Image (cartoon, rainbow, N blue to C red; front, side, top):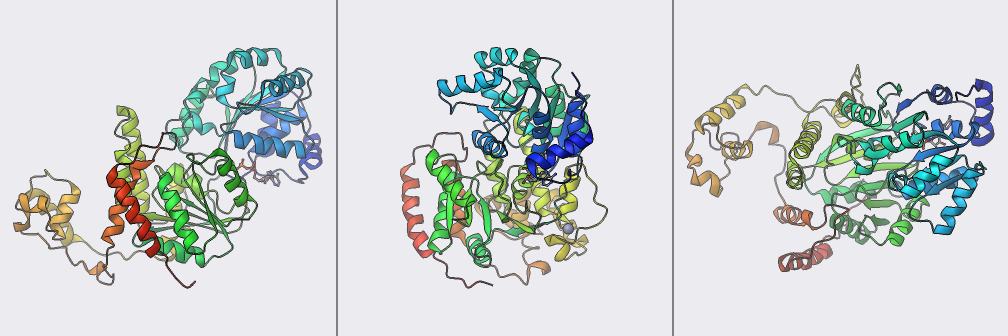
Length: 521
Ligand code: ADP
Ligand code: ZN
């Protein structure tokens, strides 16, 4: 039954419960839409204030609102927050004992609970479903709704069953789906899967104006990393790495260099994970070195930098992870250390996926790589990806502040095309690049490509003359070996081969050598 509640009553409740004087952006319209019994689809960036859009109507409506949430930690945070505000909120998940579950259910049936947080897995359980059919439910909120979409970055198959479950509980319930993800592809997928094609869409800009975006080459990445962190001592930051092993290595590296850092990944003992997260939230530690397992729903407003040690799997992921910087509205810096090799490694990890999944993953990676390589305003590119148009360059990204040198490459383009022609279009772009820059490798030689007219022609491009060219071959090698150790957070760690053990010893030794004494900038 639609509830009619005046704007004044809502504003009073906003002040009374949350202590806020004003609604932010579209919050009030969103709340009214739920109160009117309609479906809503809310797209707002992290930190915009999505939670209030379902918390407040839950408080003023009769009955209990169901909030479907993907993570136990996330539910617990929100429940604690609500309880601190004097609102009865509870959760149902695998962390509760049977006695605790019964207590929650009794309170709900007595009409005492305003918000019930539940994971899609628990929602699927038959006894929970039968219970919810008896309870007085006000509406259903689906937080982090992008988890429903294979085009998103946190896909969870159980999310796909939500629609049928809600229909079973009560097909008339208003639904509000919320996400900080905004690619049109993900949006369509969510709406379709939840049957929310007719929902009212509330979309705010995804422009995080206070975030500075910068891409750096991965050359001597450890030195760059330490130098950056040391020049921001005492500031909170997150370093994202692709593998658990890398997380451990980087955390160790930072520690031996006197940086207050802790690791976080799904392979750690749950208690250690919780302790490390708490230490970061409570400012006992400055830097969290983590896989993407860390971050969703973590409300730490003063993160000043987010560094990607490795490339993310999609621009979507990049946006989410960088979005954890500067939630307090003050400036945040987002640095991505990029290397084409990372894209190739990520691509290899998709090889066991199904055909269409593999294709999706490839497209996402290609978009990520384009973003890293293009010399135009990063913010414009990023917003364009989210279907938003930024009229002017932002002035607050690396490409705006340090425009890449542009030059006419007519002659160089001819060399490339001629080489492709001479090799009959049968070779990869990497091979063509090897020919042009005069790389004398086995492959090039075995085809006699070192005899070609343009072999080595691009070896000394004028734009690279200023660069020093000491590649740390050894370091690159190691990177290549270690990814498959534990790339997938949900997978069991594979036994280490002898070779890898030897490598580990070698890297241990290297770690000692790795103590980099750099003075802050
Ligand atoms: P999101 O879920 O969109 O990432 P949150 O719901 O966590 O964002 O809100 C981010 C912050 O903004 C929280 O600290 C919240 O208390 C605050 N906030 C939300 N709405 C308002 C408001 N109307 N006025 C002031 N602060 C608000
Ligand atoms: Zn810019």
